[in-house]
Length: 518
Image (tube, rainbow, N blue to C red; front, top):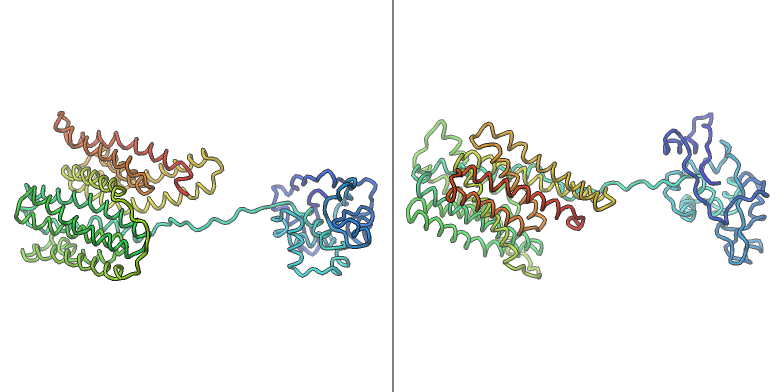
């Protein structure tokens, strides 16, 4: 039999093979018949049906598996003819009757039989069902298990269902990403509480210089700590403990070099200590502790529209936040330092250099946007939470595209589509906020596209191209106002507009390869 036999439904309404198989093919039509080997063509001289009572097929055309043993009266099994014998043909099965027990059994086991690639698998299913030789002969009219398995294999078309989609390993944590976005913006509440003299002139320049050094140092240190975290928490904690104090010293020195000794330098020290402690807590996944440490300055800044706190509170609340952040960082580092050491190769410092340069470039571009409109910096910092969420989301979409693609070109197309969707999803809330601020929409959108695409490339290890392009955009925004008559906003727009399409092209090229997501 070369395909499924259409059966009318039984009067009792019980499921039959035709009902089970009609849903597998549109319109209830049978699939294309399974191709038979040349030695298994129907025998026109054989008129005995293969089912229903005693069979002469096994005696008339035995397809032996053991040669002389089969001829001596042993059971016959399905298989090719012995070497040297002429090919023997199979009998043609007549249309099945609704009350045929073999068809009923095929309907019951259709799901298991359809996935089989050989009759032996059907035989294994029958054995697992407890099928005995007597039952096979008396109920189904077949001489042995393999004959019945072969008949069932022919009656049910092949159907290999796709495996279920595995869980997404890059499924983002929505609450954590939202909290991290707030944690990037909430430290700005400390600046309104500070003395007015710190927010202008050399004091402001000192804070900017210290922040740029801290951002660059924190990016490089965080990357190195994440690499060591793969070996164990102790290695990551040692890396953070050794790298944070020098970062604080460098940032403080930058603030002193710009403003000299004074209140601004003291504020720069506190800012540097906080950023170092925040980096430790964020790398080790303790965002909630950092949120608790920020409560004093957030509460003080929230009360400013209705109440002007005294100078003691204006200075004490930021100091309390710094102390809480540093204490929380040490509280997290201590148990990690007591963990068992994990031997492993120590990455070179040069591997983290492009990440630090990217932090410097991103900080410079954000500073230029903030000098024109401080609210632009708030929008960008708040967008870091959705940016991190979309980084995870792109990884999940890329893995789904990898599973559903059959050619490299198809995967590149799906990966590019996921990239465009994620970039658009990141820029959409930024575009919605531009009517509320004074920054031109094109400038802020170009800056956002540069930052997110560079972060995506760095997440996949493409560090130097993204760092170089961002440094080029920052250098353009810095130098053009001095060598031409262009305003700072236009200079930044030119730099970001030139870097954004190149970064997107680099992302399409590098991330459109399946090996990048393996």
